[in-house]
Length: 130
Image 1 (tube, rainbow, N blue to C red):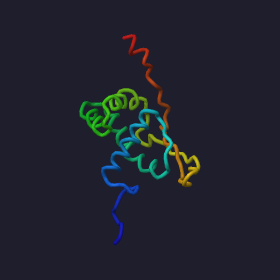
Image 2: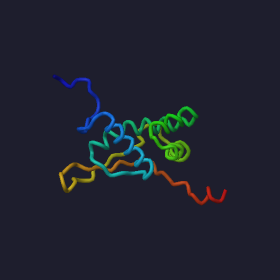
Image 3: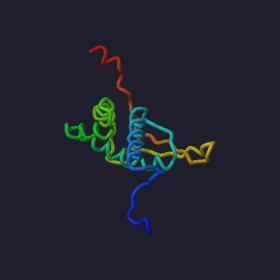
Image 4: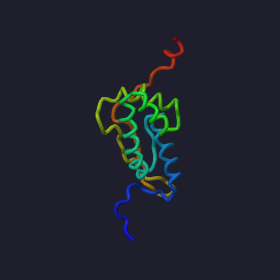
């Protein structure tokens, strides 16, 4: 048997577990603006996360609903569309992967995935004042 034409890493997980892993990593990335994970997971996360950012940059209602559906988090989806996506000034290549060394326990190669552009937090004080 050959593996021609199969895309993506399986991570030794079933499909629903891989989907949940990707969604969880994306939620953490958009919440904390940078995360530390294994290099393989970071490389696998980059493609769906960048597609979601491109969708969020469109900013219309249909795109907003798709972003919320793919993240399974309404607050984070709205934050991505309203705050994060407008601050990104490039058309592609939104994320950067930097190798950070090896994990102590199993020697897995670790990496940090973060935004190329600086993402500033919208202050919660302004929302409370209004």
